[in-house]
Each structure stands twice: as C-alpha cells, then as structure tokens.
Image (cartoon, rainbow, N blue to C red; front, side, top):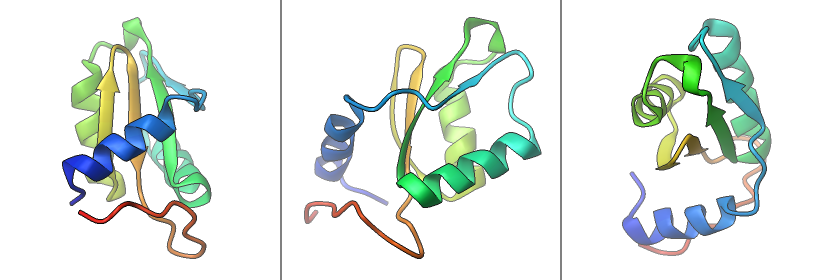
Length: 98
C-alpha cells in the first residue's frame, strides 16, 4: 500500500506519460491482463485510456486491474487511469518515504 504522498508523486510523474493502450467495448480479457502486466514490469508506471463504449466506469476498471495485477491504483482522472507496480527485476522509480 502506498501513502498519499507517494500517490501524489506518481500522479505528477504520470502527467507527462502518454496513454499506452485503450480499453474498449471488449472490456478486460486475459491477453490484455498479460500485456498490462508486461508493461508494468518494463515501465512500472502506466497510463491507460478507457473508451466511452467500454460500458464500465474508469474507477471500476482501475480497481479490477489493480487487484488482478497486484498493482497500486494511482489515479482515475476523466477517462484516463494510472497504475503502478514496482519492477521485480529492475526497479527504476524510487518513491519518497511515507
């Protein structure tokens, strides 16, 4: 669990990140979860775009992804969601102390 200070730090880092994938009407599936997990391992911090036709709210998708991937839900702003998970092999992002 990350603190609010750490979450704010990650949100500020995510501001300049582009959304790397979109979640559409197909919703979440196993292939997408594998792709997101690989992206988290490589980047640690990812931003995704939830399309209007997905049928679910971005906050719901963010919470489902965080639980399925063992990641931290950083932010859901508008239709964009941000996830963080420290890399097991090569951690790059150093969080401020809680």
